[in-house]
Length: 269
Image 1 (cartoon, rainbow, N blue to C red):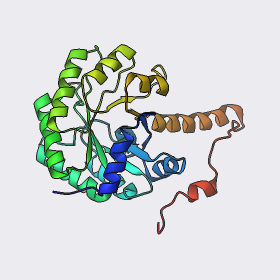
Image 2 (cartoon, helix red, strand yellow):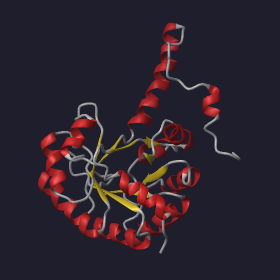
Image 3 (cartoon, rainbow, N blue to C red):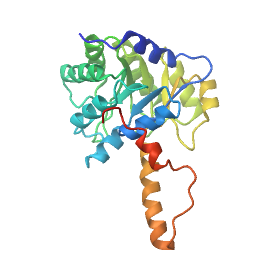
């Protein structure tokens, strides 16, 4: 059995139970992005599995980035922010192997993990198996915050009833929070909130409710997922393409300077 530092575990849990506003959890893909978000005042930072996978030239959601995920956690864990790590489906269908990874992540300084039931082929992990992963992880690292994600809405088709059933199963399995990406309709968000006693996490989207509205609906955590990584990638390509097309660089006001980025380096790096 492994543990997370008690004060950090409590601090992260409390961020999910604030009466004023949901926890806004931005997602990083490397040391610089995590350090920059922490420097901007975000007390907790998640990782994005797409960003980690794409940076390594690998597909997301295919269970291929266990080593890269653990390497990043060891690089940024224990920093000046609370770290939650996206581990896809745990990179295994053996609950014991998923628990072994959770132990390594806790030792690296992570206070939470995001564990999803979506599969690369578009199917969902059987709820009993996903529940077994949750239970085994919590047995191995009781203080680790397990955010149990179900992709019932992410895969399309609504599925409010199936969502409610899976949320109940994951709550019974010992999850600390639940995540339903793809929810944008206020009625479905409210239904998911009502389906569980755990803090509900949703994904921020341009066409979804505002943070204020999400708070009113009872959402307790809002993630950005891969959005920041995709924005950064798009901005890089668009800047290069604009220079090629116009001969001059576009005006930018929010780009950090060289010295500011250098300051993000860890001591001793």
